[in-house]
Structures are given as C-alpha cells and as structure tokens.
Length: 120
Image (tube, rainbow, N blue to C red; front, side, top):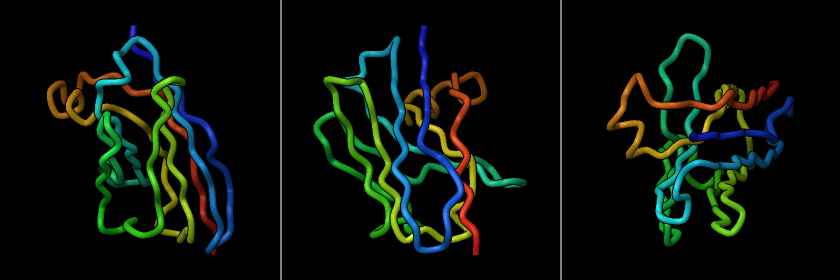
C-alpha cells in the first residue's frame, strides 16, 4: 500500500525559506522518479520539481534558482528546499511519482500535503 507523508510546511515571510520532506512507503523508491507538486486555491495542481533515481533534476521556470529538490534513497525520502519564497508560492505541496500521476490521472494516490503560506 502506497503512503506518501509530506511535512515541513508553515507560515513564512517573503524572502524566507522552508524545507519540505516527503516520506514514501509501499513503492520501490530507489528506482522511482519523484516530484513535488503544488496546488494553490482555485488552481490546478502543478509539478514544480522532479528528481530521477540517479539524481538528475528538473524545475518549473517559476521556481528555478530558488528551489532545490533532493532525495535520500536509504530513507525513502525526498526533500524540497525552498528559498527566496514569494507570496505566489503559497499552496499545498505534495510529493508523488510523475510517471504514476501521468499514467493513473485522477485515480493516483495522493498524500495529505503540507501547507506553505508566504506572507507579503
């Protein structure tokens, strides 16, 4: 049974930093691509960063240079270091495997997410 548990969100001022964590179980974490998604109120969920099993990364243009995704395969955990936060980064953040999300669509499992709020 897949479980994704996100943590580390909170309230921070513009320019501040947060580090999100996602602990995964029930998947072969070491071979999976993992990604961080976010969903702001009234908007669709979007992929902001992804990391392959060997560590290559991709970022959405909106977060490039500010966010860093990393993973610890021994701990089945993926991280998102977020620096220089802006009010437009306010959203609920989720982790998942982008290949699973694209394959399963609306039936993909999602964790509870972690709320990030950036005040101006």
